[in-house]
Image (cartoon, rainbow, N blue to C red; front, side, top):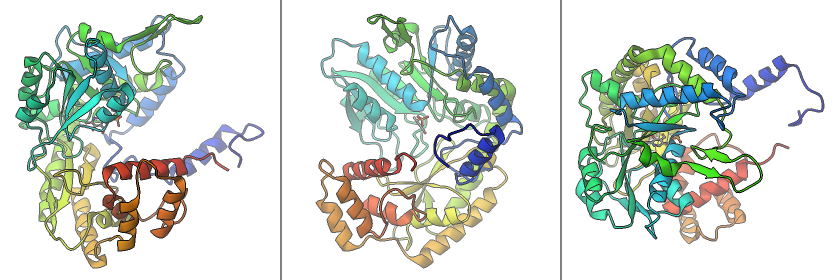
Length: 482
Ligand SMILES: Cc1ncc(COP(=O)(O)O)c(C=O)c1O
């Protein structure tokens, strides 16, 4: 079937083809995919979101006067998010397409509010989301990355304070961090930023919609929101623990003066005056309306119940990991994310465990070693995991047994040498292809079934080379259909 059929086809046929394509994806529901997706398990929620999306997807958020419904829904979402994270009557915000866009905008606003700074920098804990490196890369800002505590993986406030320079335009901390699920000491970091007159962003993309409910359930949640003096902006993703379809995050600012530099206007062309609140210009009303509908359908009490289910799942899975011979949980996670590492010399490797879990119908996400953080498997636990915790843990134990029996996935010494000789600056597509061939992985283009050999190979490569190799990989898979 050509990518553009010569004649239009029946809608049902098209949907059947799409369903067949989607059947090869990771499941988004049922709790078996422990990264990328968030499943409330609430019956009918997807259908409601899809109907709301359809009602608004052709409307354009580019012009709030033309589509006041989108303006109203955006203001509702911002109010709801602000209400959860200690916003006041001065709190304002914007709806962005995702967490990365919210983080980009926080950096952009901080940079542009300081035209007096020649060489702007942001101070981030080494565990801050890569979105801040992307922001720095896009906006010509320097990243001052500060090592975190090697045992707790939390940012060290004194080290952050010491890293703040005259050129620092933003200090960042996470609530919680994606990699280890721990909340940084926000109170101390915000105080250090405020003492230097610098903005402080709390990245609560993943925790913003669940930490407040965990606290209401009696969990000890460290202070992380606008109630902390010195916090000037917070990002909260609705497509994570608010269980909304993808494409919605809220960036909140403590007051409108802080948001001002995030906005963009251009009248310097013959068309309409371009007036944007975010990085996008045309903005579909679809994700916004879908999120708005989901929030109204679930309601505050519904989110409390979802957090309760999630909390039960986290507790049981966390306790169970500790009982699997050779495994441990990294740090002391504060929220709903767990990082599974091995004890010393476990006799197996986690990349193989991940593949063994895939074979058992679960997706767990390998994370590479970084500074003090060893290779580990990331779990994003959601409400849908409640009820199948035992099954997950039994499969995890059997995946570890299988990985032990298989032995660690290691990389041939000559391949390690080849990798050591590669320069990320000058790597060519040909070198990439021959590296794959040398590893017995075939030419680029096909998606591999077994990830362990690839991950083992990537783990040997220094971060800069790994980035480069993966960019080559992207270039090899994003090719027009033939
Ligand atoms: C803490 C944190 N910040 C930012 C992001 C980026 O969000 P997105 O993938 O929606 O762009 C994530 C994603 O998991 C996150 O966990």
